[in-house]
Image 1 (cartoon, helix red, strand yellow):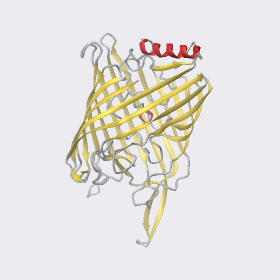
Image 2 (cartoon, one colour; image 1 turned 90 degrees about the horizontal axis):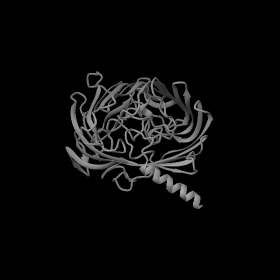
Image 3 (cartoon, rainbow, N blue to C red; image 1 turned 180 degrees about the horizontal axis):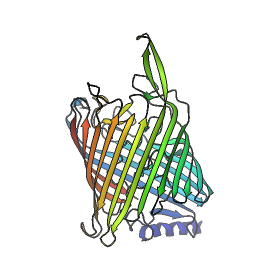
Image 4 (cartoon, one colour; image 1 turned 90 degrees about the vertical axis):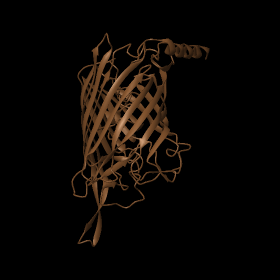
Length: 448
C-alpha cells in the first residue's frame, strides 16, 4: 500500500512540474493530472476537468420573452460547459472512458425543470470500454460513445476549438436520436498507413417528438427502431494525429504539422416521418423516410515561422443533409429567452434538409507580442446554409448566413484562455426581410 501511494504522489508531482510531452501549446501542464499505477507509467489513470464560462451580450430576435417580459436585448452569464473526464489503461490493450457534466446553464434555462435554470442535470456524456485487437490497425469498443461519422467537426474536442465554439451544424441529430452527440452502440477504429478510420453501429434514442403527430415538414420519427450506421475516414498527409480518444483537435497552435482530407456519413433507415394529404384532402397518410447525412472536409494546421512561433489553422467542410422533406430545425445555444416561439432569443435555422458550407481560419501571432507567455490568435468563421424548407412568401429559398469574428488570448495554451467573439446572425422572424443581430461573447476557460 505504501509503495502504491509513493508512486501516485510521485506521479502527481511529476505532472505538475514536468516540461515533457504537452498538448496544444503549454509546457506548464505537462501531461496533465496523470496518476501512474506502476513504476514505468504504462498503467495509469488520467483526469481532465474544465469549465467554459460565457459572459454575453445578445440582441434578441423580435418578440423574444425573458421571464414574462419582452426584451430586445439581454446581458447574461452562463456555463457553456462544465465537465469531468477520466480514462485509464491498466494494459495497453484495454481502455475505459468515463465523461460526465452539464451544458448550457444560464439563469433561465438548462435546469432540471424547464421553467428555470436551477440544478442542471448532471449526465453521462461518454461511458465505454475498448479492446485493442490488432495494434494500431483495429480497436473495438462498446457503450455510450462519441466515435461519430460525417466530419472531423462531428468528432470535435470541446477543449481546443479555434473559434469560440462549434457551429452546431456539425451535430445534425443532437439530442434528437442521440444524447448530446453520443449514441449507445459498438464501434471500430484504427489506422491503416496514413488512413485513419472510425465506424459505428448504434441504437437511436427515442426522439423528442414522441408525443406529437407527423406534420407536413419532416421531423424525427418516434417509431424509429432501425440501427444508425456511421463512419468517418481521413487521410493524414503530414503528422499523424492520436486516435486514443475520439475527440479531434481544433488547433494545435503550431505544435504539429497537419494536413488531412476526410469524408463521412450517417444513415438511419426510417429515421424521419411526415404527413401527406391525399385524395383531394380526404386522407392523411404518414410517410417515413431515411436520414442520410454526408460530409467532406479538409483540415490544415501549419507552423509558419518556428522562431516567431506563428502558425496557420484552417478548416472547411461541406455537408449534404437529408432529414426528410422540408425539415428545418432552429437552435439557440444557451438561449437567453424563455418565450417567443422556436425563433426566440438567439435561435436561427441551424440544421435541416439541404446543403451547408462552413469554413474557419485563424492565425497565431508571433511570440512576445502579448508578453512572455501570452499568445494571441485572431480568427474568422462563416457558414452558409441552403435548406429545402426555408423559403419566403414567393417560394424562393432564403439562405442562412452566419459570421463569427474573434480572437483567442492564450495564457497557457488551451489550458487557460480567453476568447472574445462577435457573431452576426440572422433573425428569421420575417423570412421576407431578414434582420441581422449582433451577439458578443467573452469566454473564460480553464482545463486541467
